[in-house]
Image (tube, rainbow, N blue to C red; front, side, top):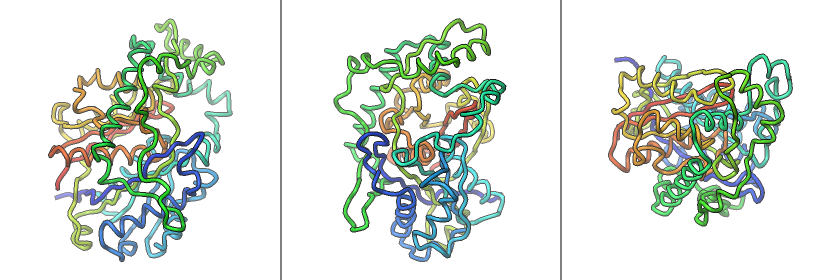
Amino acid sequence: MPTQAFIYDVLRSPRGRGQGTADLYEVKPIDLLSQCLQAFQRRTDRPDLPAAIDDFVVGVNTPAGDQGYNIARAALLKAGWAQARGGLQLNRFNTSGLEAINLAAARITAGYGKTIIAGGLECMSRVPTYLNSGPMMNDPATVINSHYIPQGVAADLVASTYGLSQEDLDKFALRSHRRALAAREAGHFSKSLETIYDVNGLVILDHDTLPDADLNLEALAERSPRFAEMGLAGFNEMALHRFPLVDHVTHLHTTGNTSPAADGCALCLLGDAAAGEALGLKPRARIRAVALSTVDATLLTGGLNAAELALGQAGLERQDIDLWEFNESFAAPAIRFQRELDLSDDQYNALGGAISLGEPLGAVGGMMLCHLLDELERRDLALGSLTIDAGAGLAVSTIIERLA
């Protein structure tokens, strides 16, 4: 039988506000990572776990400043895990954390590692999203030639072409908040959630802070378009030139129906069967398939393609999947994904998503994996799909199968 990549455990920090009164601002990214690493020793009851680690892969959307210069290796050393091998930092925009997990699973499947920790990190209160810049931010020739437009304008293009109203987007946003609040109140996040402490052992944060119990449709409707000015700076014209059958871009996404900036970290302990036996651990799930898709850089619609590619790789049909997670960077692509796949509300983003919980960009894929696996176990279900749309036409999808 081919080598399989098993998930032995998943964990995450709470998601804290990344703007204004930032809940995790006093925690340096390296300390957030190292605390989560050390949590695996406690959860597995294996103080010798570091010696078994063949690599540590961390996805970061903005690998600069406090979360740059291979923070993966730095965090191993800060955690006292000098025996752990490796340390790799990667960036595939907001799919980075999920791609880190996928890469670790691929290495295990290929036989190039037995035990790997992978996941993502983003501290947006300390490291602004575009701090590391790049050609798609600052080089007009690259932007024009690649037909790249910012994700917010691309999301408004989705809403315009799909015939969605701001009320549609706001209703989806309110649904996200209500689900996240209900899940938090019922303790559905508790299995994966790790409390973050300061150097004196005092609690800094033990819950997700962004879901809003007072939110309503009337308040959401009063919010102004978030990306209209950006669109008028030339990106609307670029989109319409690229897709001449579309006659307008209506800017409907606001701060209420898009994901707010957040801080957080999420990690996954993966290994082959021999690793589990050596560490005395039982696998909770296995990676069934991973897929990467690209569409035109103007669009934000690749998730559907990626999800269907992953289904094909796993030999599954849509109806075989019990629970679906799709990243809620923006309401319109999330609505489109659900409608195109004809997914019931009960099986789609059951615990809310980034609109209500916040989106720590590099970490969001790992956090969604925590939600997905915990909910599969709570409901005694088997198969889950996790998909993220990213900038420049990228999208990633992963399918897991619960075992425990």
